[in-house]
Length: 389
Image (cartoon, rainbow, N blue to C red; front, side):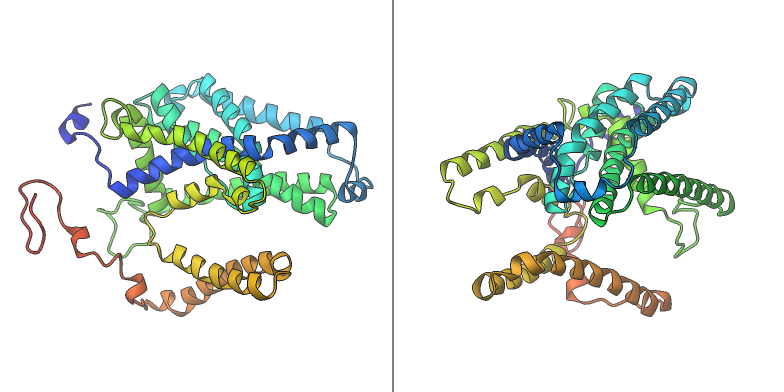
């Protein structure tokens, strides 16, 4: 508290604060969009599965032994039991009470289905990182580790569930035995977790002053930018708390209106669709994707969005004007080709330029081209070429 009073309220840039607002709206819009546009479909699919009707893929998969439900139940019980043991017997280190674990698990359960639908239809996965940090920061302010743990169990659990569902869906279409998929997933999780923990432990014990910029030598690769972001988030959301940012004690209470906007946005789109049913482009307005993509812009420049729009506009203009049949045949192929091309170029540039210490600077990579962006904003500070406040 003394450090906060000395530092003062948290101030965010306009773009960064707008990012938080769009993140709030995207999470709520995901629930609203799925309820309005996919609610009936979910109910029909549930009824179909309950009545035992099967599509061609399910019929072909019947020759394999299905995964017993108790396998999943055992995994769930073991995971919750181990997590509860940590929360109860290591409460000084974890800082999160046992009910926080159950609450985080409930959030992951609620959002897994709607986010899976958005992922399956758009290949974009909305995240729960902001909303989980917000919730735990309001409930238990002043506990940064508890905030991080709640975020991990709420957000990462949902993300991993969606990833596992993707694997099962691919295995279903490729006719891979379900039990083999389950065993491989479990083995891969155990191996990956063990290797990650061993690597992290080795790095922390062998590299002196790792992740400490002021103590590391120049050009050191061990600055840990991703871990620093995670740490900063725990301080902002857990230690300072949302009440001092988005509550009455902060400067950004107006951003809470984005929750309402995110909830009502898909409803308005659905009403437009019902009013003008012949306009096929209206149901294609997917607000969770639009809001989530906009919120993902900083700290990157807008060059990535411009390149997507440029390629997409040319491809779609040619397809709809000359070859409409290409949309269904080559749309996903083009998307996969662009992703693969990006990955290959990243590898080529790393081995050809980065390993040799060569950097390329040109107009497209030279910042935002705004000289005033580096000017101070505090009152009473004068810098040549900058306006004085």
